Length: 57
Image (cartoon, rainbow, N blue to C red; front, side, top):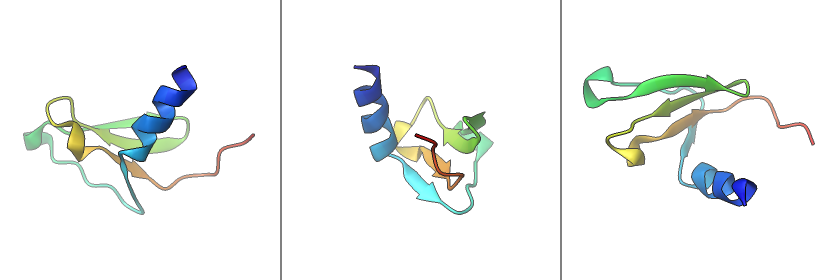
């Protein structure tokens, strides 16, 4: 179940070569699993993920 929720969370995210965060709009830069994410608790549509290394199977 957790994997399915993670899949839907990734689908709704912008994937970019470089991410930019605006702290005035509530963006936070987070590093998880070797990738850089921009999350925004107040506006979930502002999610971004930087292209990173391929996931190992």
